[in-house]
Amino acid sequence: MNSRRVESPAAEVHDGTVTTDSAQGPPPGKRRGRRPAGQDTRTALVEAARTVFGESGYEGATVRTIAARAGVDAAMVNHWFGGKEGLFAEAVLELPFEPSEVLKILLDGSIDELGERIVRTFLTRWDMTGGGLFQALIRSITAHEQAGQVLRDFFLNQLFQRIVDSAGVENTDLRATLCASQLMGLGMTRYVAKFEPLASADVETLVKAVAPTIQRYINGDIG
Image (cartoon, rainbow, N blue to C red):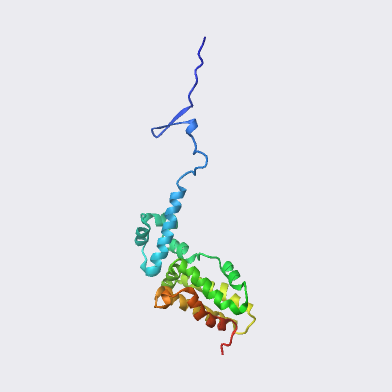
């Protein structure tokens, strides 16, 4: 009686490593390639960049410092972002929230409580990141024109101009600029200059103190 020979799966040799048909391809449920590790590196660089740009501004920040803060090789900045400019654009110029989303939140309610919603919304969101993104934008304005453009576009064109227009009042351009100046000044004092006790005051204390001024700028008497 002839015995039947059972053949093992075909084997291939790649770079000295033997693989079989049954071992080819990743097991179900596992990712291919190195994407997770790469994404971790990218995220670490973006977070480090926001911190360093916030501390030193655009000119003072260096690729080497950012990479060291992220715990990666400086070459990774060029690999992922093409250099310091590209990293700045993604880490700082890309706001971490959609203006339309913020506008919807602010306009959802009584117009007479707009000042409170504005102060509470922005302080809450900025506090979540320690004000780092705001710091980075402010400290980069003098050296990077786009930082100023981002702030003007967000605070004036996409936010306060639309808010004031919805109030049906006169002098909308001036009112929108006054609102922006109040919020920018609050951010500067709390996150950049860090004047006490304002820098460590709780959000609701500042809402009560600052909101009436912003509310007056929106639909009150500005003389």
